[in-house]
Image (cartoon, rainbow, N blue to C red; front, side, top):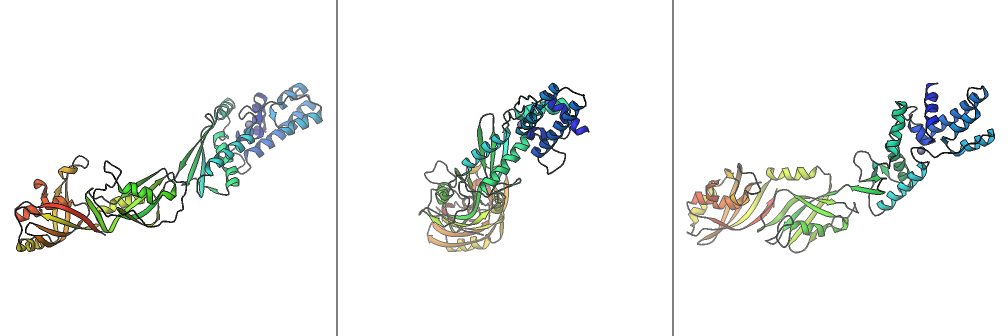
Amino acid sequence: MRLTDDALEVVKNYPLCDHCLGSLFARLGKGLGNKARGEALRRIIIMELDRMVREGEITREEMERIMSNLDNEETMKVAEMLGLKVQRKACYVCGGKWEELVERWARKIYDILKEYEFDTFLVGCTDCGGMEERQREIISAFRLPYSESIKNSFKREVGKRLKEMLGKEPDFLDPDVVAIMDLKNDKVKLQIKPVFVLGRYKKLVRNVSQAKWKYPYSVEEALERALKDFQGEEVLLHASGREDVDVRALGTGRPFVAEVRKPKRRKVELKPYSDGKVEFSFEGYVTRDWVEKIKEQDALKSKVYLAIVYVPEGISDEELKALEEFFKDVTVSQRTPKRVSHRRADKVREKKVYYVKTKKLNQKSFMALVKAQGGLYIKELVSGDEGRTEPSFSSFLGKEAKCVSLDVVWIG
Ligand SMILES: [Zn+2]
């Protein structure tokens, strides 16, 4: 029989345990398991050797030599019964330590994962400590077409053992944690899936930046505190647009997705948070694709701003009325403002202003409520940015107008 002949040729030359012998024929008899495959082949080989000796095809010494390559307790028992002197040799691929290795690495991963909350896991392997190379040597020497890489079967066996220990399910597509074994360096590397939370923030004071930056305080830092129960390594803020450091975000607040990296806890009760400068409300858990979604939403959403405008030459009630009438559903073409041109592509964007409502404060300043399409720079809508934004309050009035304070009060 071809299969037995192949297996016999292999064990004439290499000592192998049941598992590693079975792995050489792993694609035959799906569902059997490598250990059972190896066990079946080993038993057939012993019987075949016994027949060959009885029929004078090989000597007892040859049988003893081949049997010493069948690394298994049962082999020794049969040898004793047959009165053969067999020196058991350790498996060439795993050193006769397969079960021990599986148990040891499963235990090692288990101990590391104890600190983490998760539902699903996956086991990976970067280096199998030479097992893969030794197995490949045999596969190519005997041209065995039905083998399975020992790395695969090691990952699978450790995964199975872990499943028993943890009472949790492996997930091959999108696991919460991936434990990657490196046998050569005796290390386990963990990949922890981030947690994503959808929320809105309000910036109650000025001089708070969105991301951690050169300003003393940022929304991102506050977010880290708000989500500290996840015990993550880092919290990233993915917001739907941004306001300037000196602009507050009030009213409905700005939507964002928080990405908690390497969280030790994945299920935390999401409570509103406020530290007097920044406020958060959380809507719930979301998937990774919300990071892009929330960023794209910015341009589609309309916003309402409250601006205090200063006109050095002074402003009349009639001019304010005319300004309100003019800025009704007006398309503004805005070249990237000078002050942000270092970080945004220089191009002209067309954005809508839906309405402007004003309230005069004194001879030289007024309050303006502006509803506009997301992405329109309001400070430049007021000043004109030396002609880069057209039309602007300045160009319409025919005199300098300056935005001295700005708040976002509503985001759709
Ligand atoms: Zn082995």
